[in-house]
Length: 85
Image 1 (tube, rainbow, N blue to C red):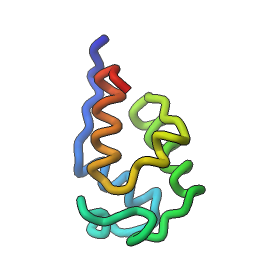
Image 2: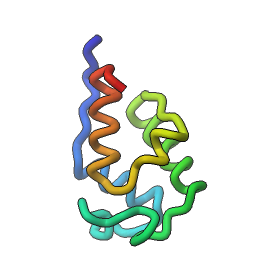
Image 3: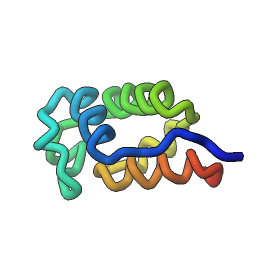
């Protein structure tokens, strides 16, 4: 199954920043959502719903719970969009 949806890292950074209510500059590859940006489990679920809607994928609570930084979100989405997630 092929999909036309790709993951643009800058757009993803902006989407995550908007969901976490921080500036896009705060979403560096090294910034940890929970420890550095004070994202709690409710915000993590909100992020999952936002990603599901934007990229038309399903993300479990377990999967979003393993996401710690922007590269984790990116890799999760790429896996999902390639049909391996």
